[in-house]
Image 1 (tube, rainbow, N blue to C red):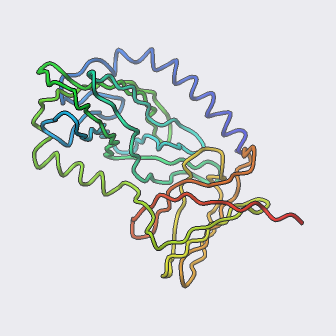
Image 2 (cartoon, rainbow, N blue to C red):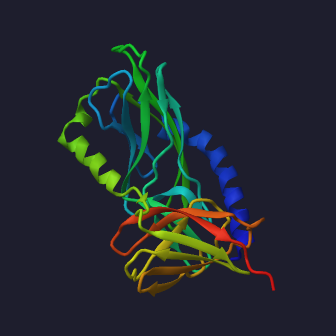
Image 3 (cartoon, rainbow, N blue to C red):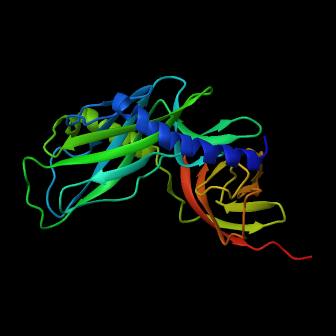
Amino acid sequence: MNRSSAHFIRVILSRVAATVALAIYPLFGGTVASAQPARIPHGTLEMVSDKSTISAGHEFTVGLQFKMEHGWHIYWVNPGDSGEPPRVTWQLPKGFTAGEIMWPAPRRMGASTIVNYVYDGDVLLMAPVRVSAEYATSPSDKLDAAVKFLICSEQMCMPGRAQVSLALTVKAQGNTEGAAIFTAARARLPKRAPANWKISGHAEKDSFVIEIQAGRPIEQGSFFPLHESQIDNAAPQIVESRPSGLRLTLRKSAELAKPLANLKGVLELPDGEAYQVDVPLAPAARH
């Protein structure tokens, strides 16, 4: 299957998912009691918090905790060659503001022609929530989120939708178990690249080349592009270890419409460490 065919399948899948999701919503969705898991296709979804209490003028973190049956997965912010990432619509009390989802490093999954970036098992998608200085605590306040997602196995995909809630006075996730969940989730988040790294890149005719000067040899690395249709996800990533770092060659996507000034994404190293990178790209040399 070529890249154009994969893109066509994604568009059709997205449209079908949007339609079918409305039909299956009464079966898999609905209002859920505070801090109670919602049943979703092949798993559960629950909203949790890293704080048992909140205060005006401060920030806390909420998480959408997906627990999936073996063999099923959801998608990263860039799903790859097919699929769709979870979409969240927050319904918050006056004075609350939710930030962007913090996406853990994904897993690369696929075959020779189609590669996706996914999560399986248990994953916590976290987002910061800011409380205004003027907020006055109300015992009836709660956080609500409408979540739409696509969950897939190797054989099929199912769209899902769930409404999850969390009372602001909830205590269950403020204990040791709740703290451990967030500690583990934060460990999976990509970190900023070390200050001593020098990162550069350039475009060639059919590829992008990333150079990492880290002051030490790096044996292996995998790059996950933040945005779709920039690299060929299914193409092998050519890794060359250097005494002072790493050289990574990525094939350009056939769907890339215009030259890129920067290539943003996540670089994952063999020890499981993942780093956010924003690589400035010198243009391809003219001959």
